[in-house]
Length: 256
Image: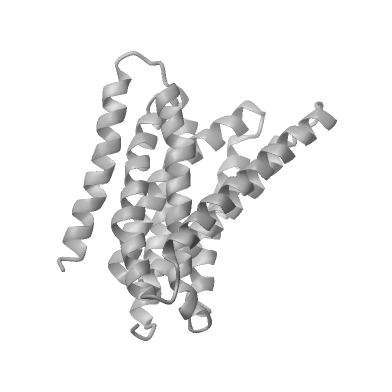
C-alpha cells in the first residue's frame, strides 16, 4: 500500500465536506417545501438503495479482498458489520420505546435523533476515510453512496423534529454540527492511518456490511410498503439506476 500523502488528505477534506453539504440539502429543502420533499424523498431513497448495494458488491468487497489477500476473512467481517448494525438499531429502538413509555410528556425522541444522527455521520466519515486510504477512486465512490443515503435520512429526521416542535433555526444548527461529525471521523482515520493500516480491509468489509444492511433492512422494505399508485415502477427503476450509476462510476474511475 502506498504511503499516505497530503493529496489524500485534501481528497478526504473535499469529499467529506461535499458529503456533509449534500446530506443537508434534503433537510433544508424540506424546511422550504415540506410537502414536495416528503413526496420525493422515497424516490431518492430508492436510488440510494441501489447505490449502496452496488458500492458494497462492486467496490468495497473486491477492494477489501485484494488488500487483505488471505490474511483476513472478508465475508466474516461483512457479516459482523451487518449483525453489529442490526444490534445497534435494536438498541436504539429499545431505548426509544423504553423512554417514551416512562415519560410520555417529554420529548425523548429528539435527543435520541440528535445522538443517533451524529454517531451515524461519524461512522460514515470513518468509512469514507478508510476507503480513501486504500485508493482515491474507492473513496469517491464510497462518498457518493454515503451522500445518497443521507439525503432521505435527513428529510426524515428534519420532518420528525419539525413535527415535535423544534424550531427551524435549531434544526439547521444541529444538523450542521452533526454533519461535521463525518469530517471528524474521516480525519481521525487519516491521522491514525499508520496505526490501523492493517485493519483497513476489516473497515472496508464492515462498511460493506453496513451498506448492505441499510439497503436491505431499512430502505427496500420501505419501498415494498409504499402503496402510492404509479410509484412502484419509478422506485424500481431508480434502484436499478443507482446500481448502474455506481457501476459506471467505478469503470470510469478505475479503468483497470
